[in-house]
Image (cartoon, one colour):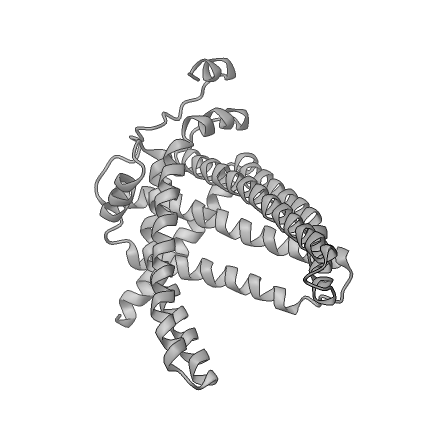
Length: 319
């Protein structure tokens, strides 16, 4: 990439970030509310997850450590093994429960932040109390699209392990293996940032248009032409920011008190969540830029007509 086009791309990246930031200044109450409220819910889920699962993990480890000291042929060993299985089953159930709750909060947060960004960008005056109805009317599209994105992501990283496996078998030097594995991981992560351009944009499309699933992915791939370099660098920026925040965990001394460790984890999880939500704001802005670039009327969003409605009329619109 030549120097001048590269600088132009960086200028576009800064411009999109600045335009996304200005959305929070256009309607401070709405934008900060839809960011802070999901952030609080996500923090509460993290707290309950740690407080509920940590004792289960501790108990599972303690029960498992007793097994090597017992006679495998004794009835006590069988009883202890059953207790370990019961503790493990409880741990799996709790993990699945909190994972589902966390996913639901994440999905609803994505819907709300994209709607709020679109409304603010279009200077529509919709109250915060109207968002539950908007969310209920548009949850299916992003859910289906997210399902397809998850399948693509799983398949992509499965390919990574398929390629990595021969390296594990053929490499005899641990240092060389670590270098090759890290280089392969970085390469896959960079290409995933490129693929995520269509993934993120398809999520926005599935919320703002009547298109979801493969159709949303196809539409995103079509309208994103000419915007990929900018969105790729945006993905790199947010990815590196989240990676840097995650690395702070390595600085946490586990010998600190549980309260300090829990608070540090809560701040980091909240920070990463806030960064990802702001990334969606930039993609909502990019959605309008893409449609404007292709000469389409950005005011014609087929899925939701953003009009100022009373709470009574909104509730009457529900099936």
